[in-house]
Image (cartoon, rainbow, N blue to C red):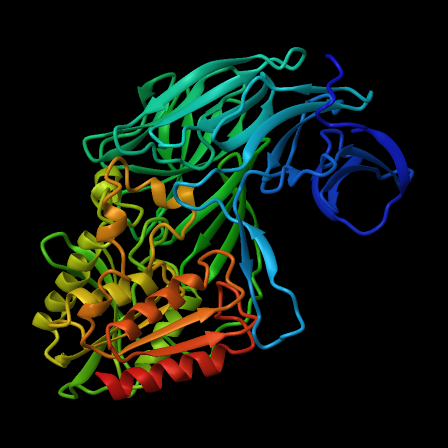
Length: 560
C-alpha cells in the first residue's frame, strides 16, 4: 500500500471523545466509528481515545462517505470509504424572506444535464497509509467488504449499465465481476449484486415481466415472483424479499441445497435479517409484529408499544379496470348508502413508492382525514409504481406523466361504475412531490375529468430536478423535458389550482412553483399560491401540518 497525497493526514491520534454521530462498529466490536464535522473517527471503547481516519481535503467541497457507512476489513485494520467532491456541482440558494437579515443558504445541487459530484474510493488503514481505488464512477450504488475483499457497485450516467467491481486492497486495482445492461435502465435492487461466503455471485435478471434472483447467472426464483430486496447473507443462506401480490412482500430463503423457500404467508409487508442461523421477522400490516426464530422454531416475540392513531380507517380494498389496479377507497365514517360525495384522488403514482399495500401508514390516515371532511378518497397505484414487475415499472420510460394519469382516470371511472355514491361531476386531486406535479398536470391536461387540484412541492420544470432520478426515465428523448413541462402548459389552465411549496425545500427547489405561478400569471390564469417559510420538502410533520391540511380541505370543498 502506498502513500497518496489526495487525503492528507488521514490518521492521527486526536483527543478524547466528544459529540458525534455513531455509524458503525469495527468487526471486533472494540471500537466504534462516528462522524463529526465531515470527518470520520474511530473511538476506542476501552480507553475513550479517538483517531481521525478520514477528513475532507482543504479548500474542497468534499466529504467522506456522506450517505452510507464505511466498510471495515474483517481484521479491523482497513476501511473502505467514499469521497464525494462537490466542487464542480452547481451552487443553488434557498432564501427565507420572512427573515430579511438572514443570508440565503447555499446548497450543491446536481440538476438534469449538469455536472455530478466527482466520486472516488479510498482504502485507509491504521498505519497512516491510504490507497486510492482505480475507479471513478458516475454513480456508486453500493460499497462493501465481505470475506472475499472490498467491492463497489457502479452505475453509468445513462443508468443503462451497472457493474460489480472487486477491489484489490494493496494496489487499488479493480476487476469487473458482473455487468448488467438494459436499453432503458438497470433497476437497482437493494443489496445486489453481492457474494455469498463460498463465492456464489448474486444478482437479478429482468425478463418476461419478472424480476428474478440469479445465482451465478442462473434464475433461482420462479416466473411471476417479483424480487424486491436482498436482505441478508448468512454463509450460503440468502434471505430476500419478494412478492406475487404487489400489496404484500414475503420472506424467502435460498440455499444451494434447497433452492428458494417461502418463509412468510400472512398478508403483510415483511422484512427481516438472518445472522448466525437466527432469523428476525418484521411484519407490518395494521400493526407491527416482530418475531425471532432459530432452527425453524419461534423463540421470541418482541412487543410493539407504538401509539395507535386516533383516527380509524374506513377503507375498502379494490382492484380496478382491465389491469386490476390496486386501490383503496376511503369513506367518511358517517357515510350512508345513497349519500353522493365528491371524489378526491390522493395518489403518489410515481416510481419508488406504493400507496396501496397490506400495511397502513400515516399517509392512509391523511386520506381518511380528508374523507371525514366530506370526500370519497380514492388512492390507486398505476404504472410506474413498484411491485408488479419490470415491464410495469418501465411503462413510464420517456413519459413520466401520461401512463400514470391514464391509470388514475381508469381507476376513478371503474370505481364510480361500481360505487354510485361517487359523484364524477365533482372530482379533485391532491399530491405532494411527484404527485404534486401529477395533480397540476391533471387539471392542465384533463380538465374534463378533474375540477380542482392541490399541487404541493411539484417539479414543474423537469430540468430543475436531480439528475440521477430524473435522467433515469428519459433516455435519449430530451424533448420530453418540454413535453413534461408544466410551465409550457400553463395557458391551458381552466380549473382552480392551489400551489404549495416550502421555501427551505432542498429536494424540489421552490423555483419550480414560483416559475409555474409566473407563467400562469403571464397567461392570465387565476390560481392560488401558498408559500411556507422555513419548511422543507416534508411539510407534513412540520409545525404547520394542521393548518396546511385544513387549508387544502377548504380549497377543495369550495372548488369541486
